[in-house]
Length: 360
Image (cartoon, rainbow, N blue to C red; front, side):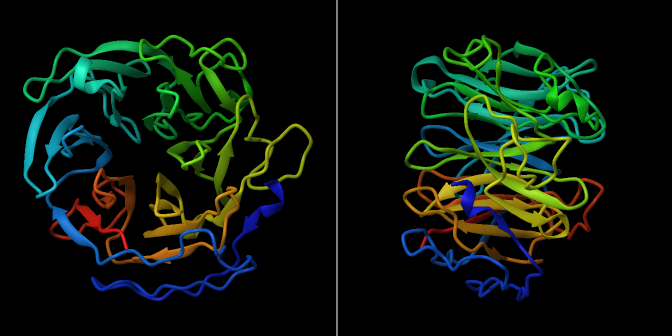
């Protein structure tokens, strides 16, 4: 699969409106794969307005979503109709820089155990906490993973349960690249843990570490074959989508983008940093969907049944500003969040927003 590395050249991108977009790109890439998803998404709809830095979304079994706000540390419940109910303010969150209340995940056994998981920045570290939530009151969070290095930048923060029912955690290297190569540090890694926070069975090093050599991963998604993909922020040249495989070293800080160096794993796809700064990632309808912050667009990346990537297509370019999260809802639609109030965007009067995109 490494032979399908894509380095995007300058893209010619059309603007977008509320009608189905017609963005296309020209680049040194292969044409879309006929077995991958290439159909344009449906017309987007603004579902919720007036939020402040909504960072992550996870769905409850009934179809409602839990949404985190980074700086306020609020956890919100949002219905598919757009009704918003505050669940509570998560205690112990020390929001500064890129830290705060970040990822959220719902237990695969939620109907039985009513457990949710949150990635938070405390006064001393980044950590993962578990709390009960039965649809009413949020229980007291209990730490299950502590000691993840924190910083003003590169705190990672995405949580997701995999098909193996293990919890995957993305961490950043806090601007100290050497931590990404140190397998004794939890920074610059993708971690894999059991629901109680212990290292998951089968981990490559007997620790929580699943993969290493990452700069700042903020998106995880699995395809129908169970393959795991992740978005990663580059520094000056190349952002990435990587195929994540057990125990591999993804090269940071020695390599940004494709290095073709022994011992390091090349990305599947790269963008110039001005075109992406990819955060959230989802799989739906035969494509990966990557939310771009600096690039202010939603990237659609067709995937074949064998996991080969086709030509990426930019959707909604400039229409909503910075996009942080993208998640596939139970009904097959995509939910997106904007991140225009994070100090790096230009907020509209209705920001920040949750936007829904129906499947085609």
